[in-house]
Length: 262
Image: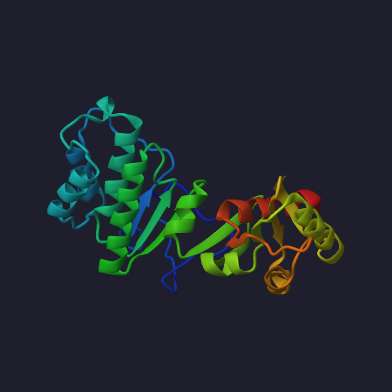
C-alpha cells in the first residue's frame, strides 16, 4: 500500500534492488498472505477477489480460483462477516495464490485450517511450484509441517536469523537419537556405564526396564553404532535398536537451549 518506507538496509528481489515503495511493479509479482487478515465483512469472497484484481491490476485465471475454492471447500458467495476463522483463512490463501506470482510470502498459512485442509493447502502449493517454478516463503510454528514440506529453513532467535540450511543438512548435523531394546535390565545397566564413561555428552531421554533412548552428537554416532553392533552387554547382544534424526522441533529447541546457556 506504500504506507511503510525503508529506514535502513536494502532489499533485493530476484537479484534486483527494489524500486521506491511507491512503485508497485515488484509488488505485482508477489502473492502475500498476512498473519492477521483484514477482510470486508459486507463482501463475499468472489467480490473481494475482483476488488483485488482492480486494485493491483492483476491477471487472474477465474477457473483456477474456482478450482481452489472447491478443493478448500470454500463458498465463494458467502459474506466475509459470516465466515468462520478457518474459512476466512481459505479466502486469504486463495487471494495469495490467484495471481501469476513468482514469489509467495505466507505468514502462518495453515492457521485455523483443519488437518485435512492443511494437507490440501500444501498439495496446492507444491503443484503451483511445479507448474510455475515460484518461490514460496512461509513462517510457521507448526514445525512438523515445515519439516515435511519445506526444502530450506531459517531459524530466527531474538529477531535475527541464526541458521539457514536445507532441512536435510540441518538433520545431518543435529543430535542423533538412539533407541535400544536390551535382553535384560542388567545388560542395559552395563551399557549405560559404558555410555557415561565413553560418551559423556550423551543425553538419556528415556530409561525404563530394558528400554533406553538417548541422543549423541553426530560425530559420535558412527563409533557408537560399531559398539552397539559388535559387542555383548552382560553377555547378551542387544535385542533391537533404531537410529533417528532429531525432529525439527527438537533441533529448534536445541538452538534456543544454546541461547539460554549463553
